[in-house]
Length: 348
Ligand code: ACO
Image 1 (tube, helix red, strand yellow):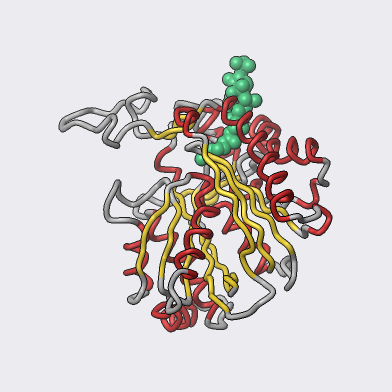
Image 2: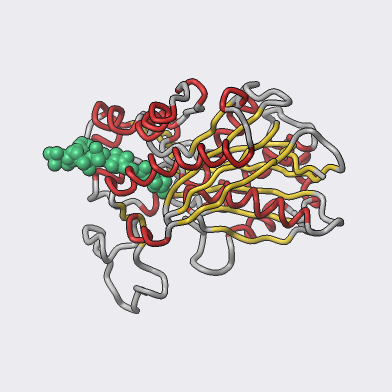
């Protein structure tokens, strides 16, 4: 039995925001952002766009590809996606910027938007490792029941609506977007998901958090939110230095553990697709592990940090760009809020 990625898709909002655009709003500049993070631009959702909207677009692109359509005509794409959607058995959606807190899940809203009428649907919150956790979860759900054949796995974020514009060291980091893959269970195949490593260190939960709005610090009727007060607002708060140190450790340890557990030689890996948080983190890991930087796929310059969406966006960009060949050995590696970390080994 094999769980193969048979199609990919992505979606970003049309509004591309450069570092210079951000520098018009806050005290920063293109040189600082590029040299400290590798980021050149990001995409921000409009007022009426929520995570489920981007997720549904990415899902439709993946479903259309699964049905054999990769062209640019939206009506044709929608027709192909609508044809493929009813065959999906389960939708797993990774996000930390859901349409709503708690319920309904964003996955359920996407299920309705794309017409996946036969699919179960649920969200996973594992921050920037969310897509890695979701792939393994979807594969497990397909494997445990002979009648389930296909899953849709989505990573999506609209972090621009959760940014604290008074904190210049975090507000420049994030972008919005979605990536999706269609998984199919095959009786026999040399391709597919081979192994996943899922880790967490909850003792670091306060290093990266959206503090307000949950049951620990709920909003109260009549409360006025002051965006300048990080402790009282609903924005992403991060101890950058702590997260940076964790991230370098996590990416290095995860790659080492994946290699050791699966007995793979690093030279046999065609591409490492890291979570796109900061190109300095990837460069530090590449140096520590003595793995050439060219093995790591980086697109953070264009999209910034899209958390749960960064790995599936990268997968789709590589797939549609012809960078992935059948038989390629691919490693994903992620790290983020929770604190979580992990990785997948996939044969394309
Ligand atoms: N523009 C200009 N100057 C800035 C900016 C900015 N946007 N932000 C901070 N600075 C200044 C600071 O004020 C400080 O100035 P000072 O020395 O005069 O006081 C100086 O730059 C250094 O500030 P630091 O916060 O120490 O900058 P650092 O080098 O640590 O970089 C960064 C900050 C980029 C956030 C880094 O800590 C980092 O990458 N952390 C990890 C983030 C991450 O990977 N998150 C991933 C998980 S998050 C997720 O994916 C959901």
